Length: 386
Ligand SMILES: Nc1ncnc2c1ncn2[C@@H]1O[C@H](COP(=O)(O)OP(=O)(O)OP(=O)(O)O)[C@@H](O)[C@H]1O
Image 1 (cartoon, protein in one colour):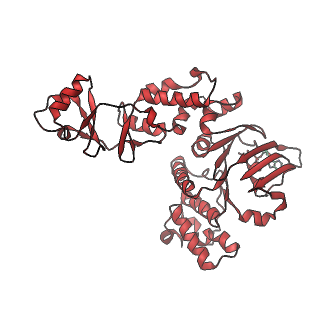
Image 2 (cartoon, helix red, strand yellow):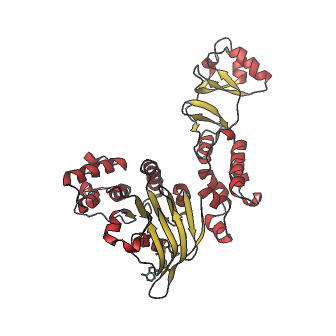
Image 3 (cartoon, protein in one colour):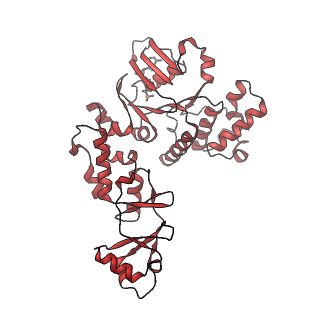
């Protein structure tokens, strides 16, 4: 969808900002450009909407050589979100959001309806916020308006330059989550600049790690963290890249352990005796439909004076869905000081993740991505012991 072919940008003062860059962003893919200040990320991005012209090389958007496209027309097909959102201070939030549709000649009513829809999509109720002015919103809310405005004309391509850079870490994480949800629904082709490796890893389908004017590695977050292509990349992603992989490695059914099980309506003493014979100390309790109810201690069951497993079971409200990142499961374990966490597929109980299994899952994902990376380079022990 976006293709760079041997693109170089040299500024008049002789600075080579981007040097012989070739890469491709697929349709519906989110690629993050990450690297230290001054390495050429913004220059790369601004060449896509022709705010900067390359010195040599070609850039294609949707198969079209953009040097042959009128820049104004080009920009209408490319949403642009920047850190300083650049909202018009004297226009309402609704009017700000409707700017591009109005520019490209949509009827006023259609442009406003679309703007309201978009505000809703980014989590701002248009009836509450639509009539406000930018100064009446928080930084995080303004940032959301920036995203809504960029999406308003439904451009296939979105360029985002440090879109969440100006807000505090908590709001930032919230905005990232919301953006991911939205992106799952709208599937734009996104090029996003960030200097924050955590953000790059969290949001990117693939990451381009920049050195000076060049891409040092262009790959999935898992591969970049698990198998850095150069010592520079290894240093840039950080010594704790083993831990960072927790956020990009998903829980798969094969990672799970099958714990002892008891049914809600079973006799407590019978279940206790059976589980004791198996050497179990606790059991997961499922209801009549095979869905997760909670857990029970085997001794408690065995010593019960009649009654069912359900009478003695503790409800369990914390679990994680299959496909969630390992980090989420680890967080639940820590929060409850538990040695395991239940994993569900919808309402169906699949098994439990234990620290040992988590460790294995992390190792599996490193092995899958990283032929030849030394085990001891990955910080497993701190995961298991933490
Ligand atoms: N108009 C310009 N004239 C001369 N040099 C420039 C110009 N714009 C950028 N540069 C230089 O080009 C290089 C790349 O800049 P660019 O803004 O693309 O980096 P960046 O990776 O986006 O950095 P940051 O994260 O700090 O925004 C830098 O050395 C910068 O000083």
